[in-house]
Length: 181
Image 1 (tube, rainbow, N blue to C red):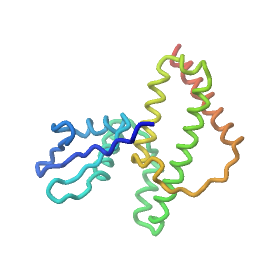
Image 2: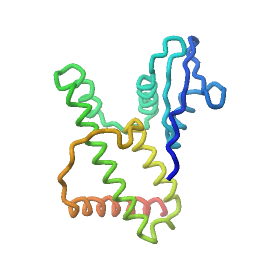
Image 3: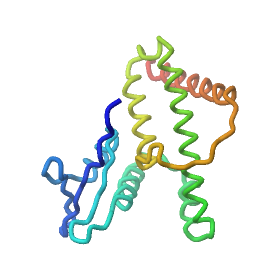
């Protein structure tokens, strides 16, 4: 297994321009979004103060995608997030989100394993691109945290997980068959 690359360091200058330290050129938010979709972790720091600005810029990328109609977060989820900042539940929200995304990641991994063992799935046009997009989405939604999040151990039955994966696979096959028509 390849050694995980260290995060791509982006420096923000006083002019608010973003500088890629690996390629020695200026980048945009769209470029940073592309790096993340490709599976690269990024760290954005203020050149003068050294403050970590990564969270601020990641939120800005999400906001821009949402404003362009690329909605991933339902209104009720956004509303609950805003509400959580004004309540004492704030301390529980990060743990809940971490546990939810960990469950999602595990479900995705099981789905990917079941799909890769099905010899028909990789032959579907665009399957690899769809799988890469799903992985990029997962990485973006978890902030690139990977397995660093500490979620409580789930005591779920494997049969329930398999049924959920089968249902997701059936829905995906249905969508793909509609696209081919």
